[in-house]
Length: 330
Figure (cartoon, rainbow, N blue to C red):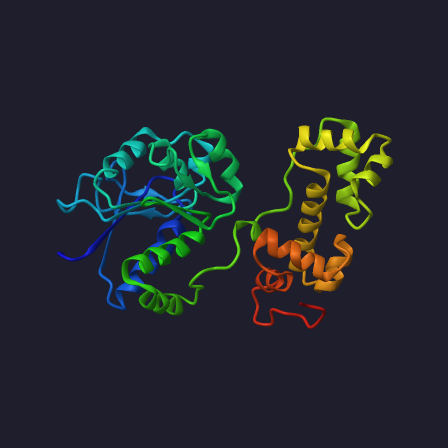
């Protein structure tokens, strides 16, 4: 219909259902408040696709089908297959056919791999699921990957982090189209944040570094992981393995691409996240994880994750109604 904002979802075999369903619900909710989003699904072949859940998803045709005018927004959904296998040539062709016709190009989660393969992200800032951010940066060095962002806009090209971050991005698109008041109505209707605080780091798994090759460094990182609350200054660590602080710092830089202090802080942060998710109090967690004080831990959480320890525990300790235990929180 004339006046509609045409949104096209590009889907493929192995796609994640939530990468489509989440943003689509945001647009559908926006229509209840006066927006006019017209949603279509296309696949490279025009045939139904098999989603990651095993469900078959019907589509409305191919990129060449539909209204004569080009779409306003093209959204490429994600799927684990995009990060584990080469992007299919027919999917790349579909994206490239939309590029000159669409006002906005969008990817959800690992859909960024498809946009990158199609050349859409060359020279641009972008993000993807935290688990695959390093791979995206290695596979496409011309893309400036922002690993902690929930979503990124760069001159009309939008990319989002994993799964539910696609819902955050869709809400941002609604706000761009219709202003904050309508977007706020949508957020209230869907019981979601207008702007979720923090970045992807608050959701990521504990440190996933490869074991060091050097036996000396391996002993040190094993000790830090086993007893994060010990005194782990660089001079103390160096004395434990009978090397100079400068040599130890060189080992950390060469093999782990970090400093001893930053590595220790990351390990303590990872321990604290696990403890808080298990329901431990902030003061107890700060002591056991090696931060020394709740205030020091709070500063680290705020700087690294964008939220406080108590906020982290509230979000991740339980999905039940009694989310907070009484205790030492700040």
